[in-house]
Image (cartoon, rainbow, N blue to C red; front, side):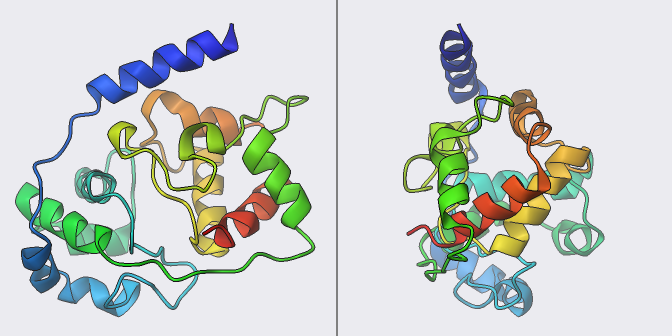
Length: 202
């Protein structure tokens, strides 16, 4: 029954997730100069609390920028200032540029790998935590059609924050409350372990 519900929801998301117009990567590079100070010139941020944007799906980036701009489902004072003057075309161009960059490989904490892999690949049936790879794929490369982001190589610290924000409701830009429902069942240890495992995926 759960599988049927998931398939139905996934199909609905794929149909209803409106895609942004295709962006121009070359134009995006010129517009991305202001992004470089935090996210790095190739989208690989040095500060682990700021996400790597390199290799992320273009539409997903554009959607996040739109959500920051509206400020309804995703709030961040620093990002709000950066996106205030961006047009939909600017966002699409930025997405196209960062999508073409190569994400730098990360590493997982060896003491957390086993537990992190279990959550990522199988979830926790006892508490209702779904496997991350069900939406994000076995290598964490995501699903651009459904706007499920690529996770592979992302900073553990950033992923931990994102999961906690979904868990507490600080962030609510997940379609159908999918991430909020999953993280509601996750322990702090599980969040830390799976975040570390994701950092080592490539």
